[in-house]
Every structure is written in structure tokens, then in C-alpha cells.
Length: 148
Image (cartoon, rainbow, N blue to C red; front, side):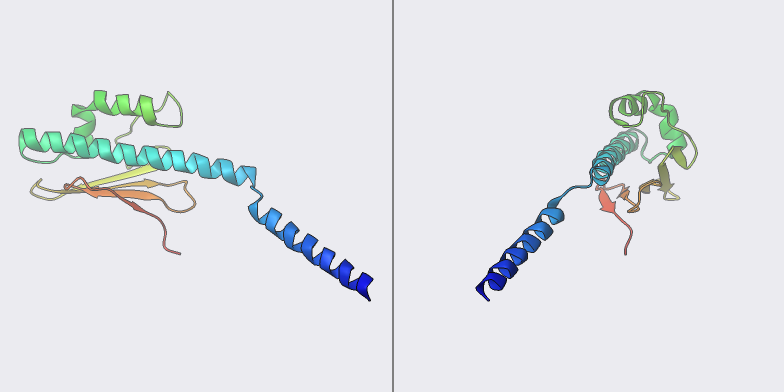
């Protein structure tokens, strides 16, 4: 009887330890994806901060905020410098005037009719969690994800 009790105890310990080890094992493909997404999310936050800074400078100079098209025209050097430094997907990338500013990133910059405010949404279109960064004329950014 004691042999069976000892065998069951050992089996129980092995099963519990086996479950604990597999719980902490990492799937390298998932880990790489998460690291890539974290880098991309940080880049998106950086771009929103850059746009907020450019919008603030334009507002101080002209008394109104600018559209994305106007920002690209007036601040192409600043935006391209940001792109070359922080965009994680290669040196040949360039901003587009369309809603998808480059592959995988969608930008909406809506101005108030009087030019005294704006709402900015930068969304990762290839992201599984629906990550987006929101901001407005106050310059405060917010991170968002899909509600599940």
C-alpha cells in the first residue's frame, strides 16, 4: 500500500511541476511578434508626439492648426527625419498624403471648422489588438485597443 502511495505522490509532484514548467515556457514566434508590436507601438506614440509638436508650432505661428496635407508640405524635413530615425520598417519608407500614411498605419487628422482644434487618430491596421494612439489640440496622447 505504501508503494502505491509513494508512486502516486511522485506522479502528482511530476505532473504539478510539468504543468508549472509549461506555463512559463515561451513560444518564440509569439515573443518575437510581441516585441515587434511593442516597438511599433512606441514608434506610433512618437509620431503622434511629433505631430502634436508640429501642430503646436503652427498654431503659435499662424493661429490655427493644419491639415495632414499642410503638415507634410510645411514640415516635410521634420517628418522625414522622424521617419528615417524611428520607423521600424525600413529606410525606403515615405509618408503618403492618403489615409494610410504608409503600409500598416492609418492616420486621421480632423480639424475643427474654425481651425482652433483637432483630433488625431493613428491606427495600426495590421495589429491583432487594434492598437491606436489618439490625441487632440491639448497634446495629450491616449493609447487604445479593441474592446473584447
